[in-house]
Length: 402
Image (cartoon, rainbow, N blue to C red; front, side, top):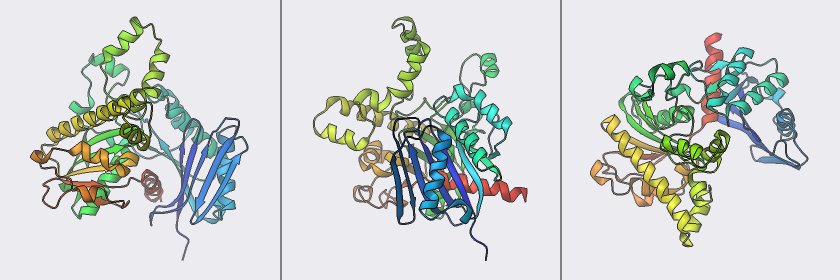
């Protein structure tokens, strides 16, 4: 009997690199590692293989090449060397595929060149993803490398949902439309919700709330997205850790003309100094709750703005769908913060949404129902697993080619 296939999934950031070894057929994660502080004076690296964890703290990790080599060394040290795990592909998380990429796509020089062109649409994400692809292809040249795009799930949004009401010719020339993000997560979670309920995906209207440091909502009918909160870039929509979500575009013009801020300064403010952090000085919701309990008014305002925007999108997507069979919470905050779930849905009994307080507070970390037995709309918490989804997309490409 041959060994199970494994896929190395890489998520490359500007100063970090995350990787997992996954068996896509069984869903088992063989190894999980994070390399941090790339390019700084001291590095931080860790790898978990089963019950064994190995770490390498202190020595500098100058670049992404060194980061991936460190990951390979830790895998070998922990007993999961790449030449021993039947590695069949390398999957790369890619954020923005523009109009060009809406399916899992083999990584080629042409793809990398196109991703560089798309960098202005996702300046925090596409450049480091390209770095990760280049390094991995150089170190693992004999394996197929496949990019899976966050925007792909939303490529076929209905035209009214994808279109901005700006000059049509300008939008066409510069490829301006709603692309949406976290698509790999929204697709995976909506499928898992249907499986959990034992109902065909095609029969469900779902609102999926991916609430992490980045946050997005999606309205999904029969497995196909009909609207989503993020837009041309990952800035739009819900309030996030350091990003504001929806803002009046006039604010940008006002800051440029009146405050004398440059485009780069406004970009930095919107991407790194806004959202919950900009209002409350904290992105970790556990700390935010502690500050609120201690009477911190700024933290309370940040939380209230976050919840208000979330409720606004839930209401909007109920209107878009006509009704919701399921509301699903996922990602770091969505999976682990019962207060956010409670407050996002509080007082919506008249809309058929009733949360069971005891179920909502449960420490269980697997997929679970948190709505009351009589709630017309089912409310679920479903852990996301973008890495598994990427790994399965990779082997689907390989199987289709064989």
